Length: 90
Image (cartoon, rainbow, N blue to C red; front, side, top):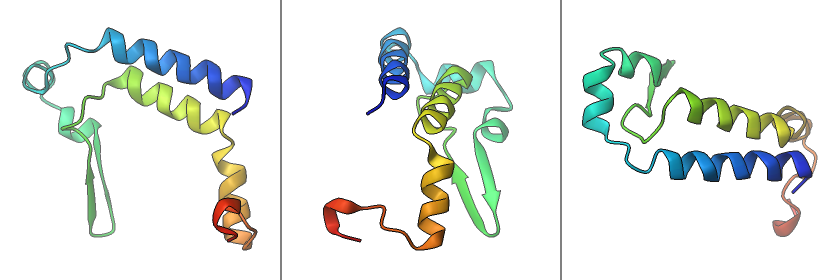
């Protein structure tokens, strides 16, 4: 784990503590567009994460972690057929 990843993990841990009293019912009551914000339709697949303990800060931190982890670089390696899972030698 690089230092940027560690930094974001720490932010995520702090965020988890700060949102430990998060309640879905309240989240849906406060935001009638929660389903639209936290779900997406790709072809015929619905990805609904609106019923998870997530808010905009959570989503931003997860995106920050993906960037810090070089997800685009790993994706390029995957599509080029490079080994990306060295623990399983594939």
